[in-house]
Length: 133
Image 1 (cartoon, rainbow, N blue to C red):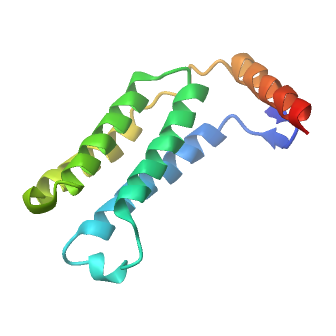
Image 2 (cartoon, one colour; image 1 turned 90 degrees about the horizontal axis):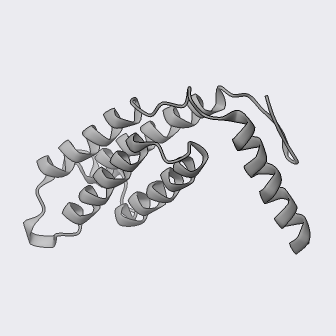
C-alpha cells in the first residue's frame, strides 16, 4: 500500500489505471469512425487525445519513464496529426495508430516500479502543496 495525504492506494492501482487508459484510447475510435461518430457530436477529438497524452505523461513520471509509455504517447501524437490533417485524413491510418497505442499499453511494465521512490515523490508533492496552502 502507498500512503499519501489523500489515503492509501494499492500497488495494483497502476494496473487498474492502465486498463482505464486503454479504454479511453479505444473510445478515440468511436469518436472518429464514420459508423459511430454521429453518436458523439460534442466530443472534441483533438482535446481528447491531448488529455490522454497528459495522463500518460503523469503515468510516465510515476513509472520512471517507461519506454512503452513513450511509445503510446508517440502513437497518440501521430493519430492526432493524422486526425488534424483535414483533407488528407485517412481513417484506417488513424485506426491503426489507435489500435497500436492500445496494444502498447499492455506492454507497460509496472512490476519494476520502485514503490519507495513513488512514496518519496508523493511526500515531496504533499510538502510542496502544504507550502502553497
